Length: 200
Image (cartoon, rainbow, N blue to C red):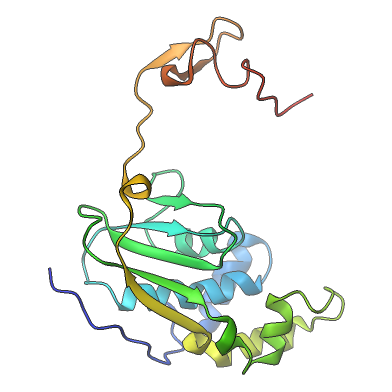
């Protein structure tokens, strides 16, 4: 499979949707017109534009906030099917890479802090320089529309084996303490009964 040269087009289309169509999808799925999801749409679109058409890809999101939703909305990669991994680096970046051969270069797209300086409203939102009450959502959305992919940077990357490996549940057992099914690899009892308590 040949690798395309990096393309950074100024298209305002988001993976086949107009910006306004994508905004409506975001509102319906996420509950609000989240700026991070709007930017995330451009990020996914740019990554897809730089991958071979018809390929199958896995995804990595380097943040838990908003970006995984954009990936799940615009690609077949979801947390549930295991094609999307979320790593808690806190960076607003995503990578799409070949599902069958992680050593083949993938595409990493990130919000470029230097490029954001040309867009003061987006910069102020991104770096939390304004409170939610001070942010003008309509104004911010329009700036994101106008900025499109111009605030992003992209590079070719090879994904390390530890992140590319497929996770399988393996053998399932029944916890002797709570009686619920759990992955046997977790030990003699489920993680909750080992003291990882979520509920009181």
